[in-house]
Length: 266
Image (cartoon, rainbow, N blue to C red):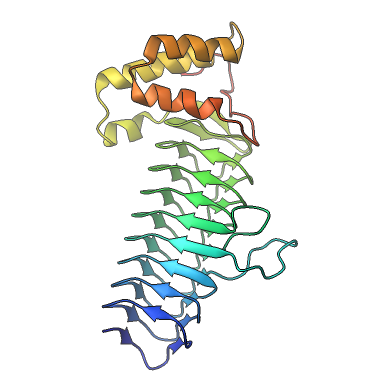
């Protein structure tokens, strides 16, 4: 049974799971589905064709599911899907997709969106992602599992952020960040590997050692990128994290790969 404050507005057609809690002055739209034990603290708006997974908490003044900030959008029935066990803090905004993208914006599970973060139309956000205060994703951005985006960072449309990567605060990211990479700067450049994150996630010393060797080879001055990718594949084909980087770099992409500021890098 849902616990709904008398000042909240639940439009006809909204679907509420068991144990949903909706606090004062919240609004839930007619096409919204809230999973079991979802909590809207107060003054939160969830609208559009939006699904929120179980045990996700949404804090005051969050705006979830309103139309995309895209001048080409004409009211098409695009969707926003939010997974389970997320924390969506005050003033966060998330928009559904567009016909020029996937018609879907997707957020995974166990993510933390700190105050005033923004997830734009057609973004795909993985699991265990953290976005710090005022970080923003442009349209069509992909953020893979366990990535961290620092406060006030801005991610350009169509950029990919690889798994376990970290983006420093106040960075402007115009290029794809490799998995396990660390990037920062007003026009972000790779600064090496996310060694602190790798340690926290329990990666072995041997794997980290191979990742560092592979990083140096991939961003060395000698040879072409195609040649360096082939060399790294031959040397580290049994190392799954290294091959994550290789596979990421080989994908056809809208944006180029973010490079170290100086040749050689890590």
